[in-house]
Length: 588
Image (cartoon, rainbow, N blue to C red; front, side, top):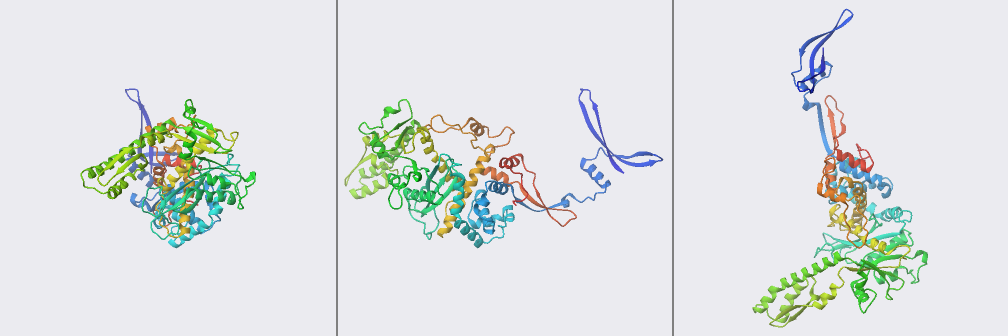
């Protein structure tokens, strides 16, 4: 017996073709030399699943209840760690870390985990049991001691890792401009025992906390190349001196152009930049150049007494190249950004008004006699006027019984003259780097600032730091830097699936603010791609990839288990296609 399926078609009264299928239970037998078919029953009225079951039984299949046919023993998130691991392999991160060994596998697992699910090391150890990363890289069985040992191993290899990255991204073949960007940031620590912990200027606005500082060196596009950790009270110039030594002596790079902000590459650093240990000038073949900016007092001096910097220079243009005897052998590129000028004027007025509002109750208390004595009044005024750092713009008169406050309009007007102005200084010849290119190079420091945002909060959650040993703190920051290197490549590869601007327009004028492309604006407004799929944030795309699971399956009648991937969505397939690899069943 067998099930016969017969497909038929007819045209209805409306002229439309109708297709249907009939199912019959038939017996086939031979009658002499002929094959005969006998219909035993019409199955067409039965549900399709029942017809399929009858057909399967007649073909010799052994049926079991649907709930017992397949047993899924365990299902682990796989897509997110598989994608990040695939990118790590593509950019050669495992070989970059060092020779194959257990410590390297754990270090790689820590870096991938920092991208996918940043958390403390002990939380990460627990999380490894709940993803395929732990099983495939042998990390799930690791103890806290093994994790710390892997961190120590990685920290000892930092110089070798960074030297390879420098050769890859800063050497002349990959970096014809011979340019490197450097900036400094800070993050706070929990605890008081770390030798690096100190009180200093907190870029996170975290008052009352000990902190560390760390400087990030990148190529002109913002790829992280090296990181250095400093005590929390280290100044920008000292950090720049350290990274300069690393680039020159450890990376062996000559004739570099270092780009840093005005607080980092100071006149003193510039003077010492090309001096040898004995105080003599280095040979021209080993001299370094720089791009930085002038501080406000130097700009005021250029504007004073008919100096070289005058407002008339900007009647028809936003930038002008000038020279000054105070900066021999250097080019000065003066820029004026009207948008920045308006923003600073608005901000200053808001801060002045906020200070006056806070001081109004203090003045009222003095007038009512509830606050007396010049000392007591001064203490209360000091608490308020330093909050917004506007004291230089107010004339405050205090007696034992009175308090008057008046704006110093002359100082306000003098500061307003500098609104929107900045002046860049560099010895790089104009034939090598034009004025507009100098401005663009300096503004590329935004890439380092973007990396800091990714490292500190957006993606990698470096802060706060819980380690107390100096080498562990350095290893933690190095892990975050290498995770940022991975994130840099992932964000670029996944730009078509996210809100990232794939083709930001090159500004015709480097002084004007950057603008998003029409394509990026369409992404933000439409929120769906042409296929109707939603765009994701970077973190949202990782979460979507995590829904691609690897399942340990056992079929009825067998004891063995088989790993099977869930059916990927089109977005998950494309995420791997953009990396350039098929979806792997295992990480290795």
